[in-house]
Length: 119
Image 1 (cartoon, rainbow, N blue to C red):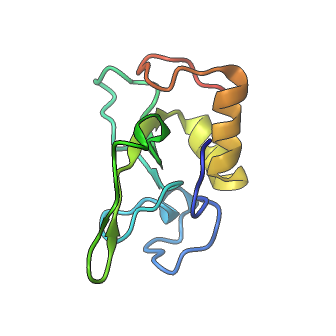
Image 2: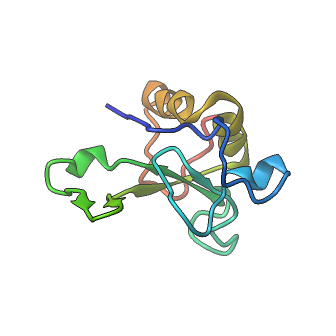
């Protein structure tokens, strides 16, 4: 089951830019599941139509990857799923859970960097 502690559509106190496309892209600080990292995949890569990453909990390996609890933080393993512009917009407006449900419903192969967008 996919879970998210914060969807990308929820407000953030770390907003560094007023533009919606950059609002949830973060280069420092916490990156919880459901965070979208915009424009991090090169157009010349294996995934030219999937330029963004959605951070999710790696449920396939959940029993093997344990979080590390430090004195002031918890460090957890996350999986970066390449997503399209339309999918990133969907996360921004509907939340990460809505996109993960769409992946499940369409049986999208999130491990295929050349997969078509689900939207």
